Image 1 (cartoon, rainbow, N blue to C red):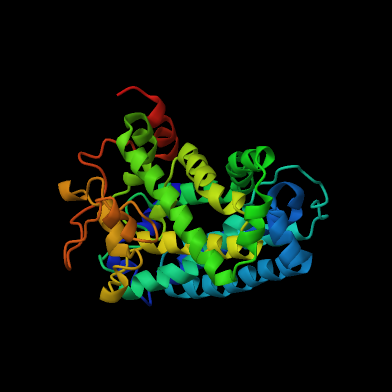
Image 2: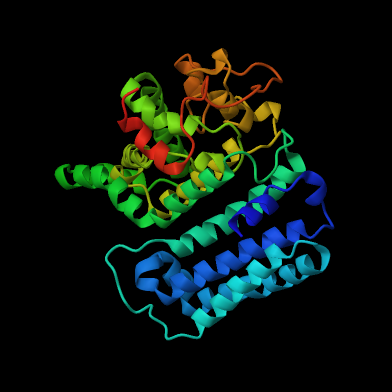
Length: 371
């Protein structure tokens, strides 16, 4: 069955066009998996649900979301079963939906509490939000003719999954350096001045300061051989799209977030400004990696664009060690690392000769192995 499912996901284009039941089948299976994951996280909320999501949605809101997934997946599976000769997608989706409903009828075990929970519900919402935004955009405005299920999409989805379910643990680890500074430094006067600024000014300052820290850390990751082995995992992707940005080594995520968080956490910016920035940077980073042909001329000197960041991932010799900033290209102009040939995109992506192995586990171990 696994082989047959793989063959269906990788089916040739004539078998996946609109009207064949392939799209509805894939969507049904995806939403059925989301329904199951959401129900599991609801039933074991103490271990698998992020507290912030529980506080916002509550038990009723989370169950409503599950049943939305269930109903939508069931309708799509019916369409797929009618249209498609191979019934695998529809049957699998309905099997998962039955399992979801069976689990939902059991006693709620969510009262069990844990000091650190795995964000299975955050993975579902994260995938739903970014998928709804970027998959249609990439279908409508794609630069390269590239399938949603492109080369190594499963690897990047696993990175996405791990980063999502470990969100609370990553947050605790990432906050440790800035919490240490706050514990041993008296910055109350400076923090009072910072927090009294208008919201928009705080947001701009956070974006600039974090980008400045990120720029130099990013540049160091490229220039120190041992650190490059961690960062090379991110550059190993040979297909740029909304999912590609999630391919990052676990160690790099901790180091990058720990240091970039320091300015906004230590200087005392308001929680509203910080959370707004976190939403912006998450969506913006996804946008920079996306397979989109947007290239507005007047924006390029002010804000980073997909073409700007795609050159950072380009396989050409000219693309090595350029365009390190995430928000403001002026940093690359100031420090001599700006590269943006007019109306030109990289011919391919990745690292020359592609030395990084495929697969999450092999890539996780790669930096620790001798060449």
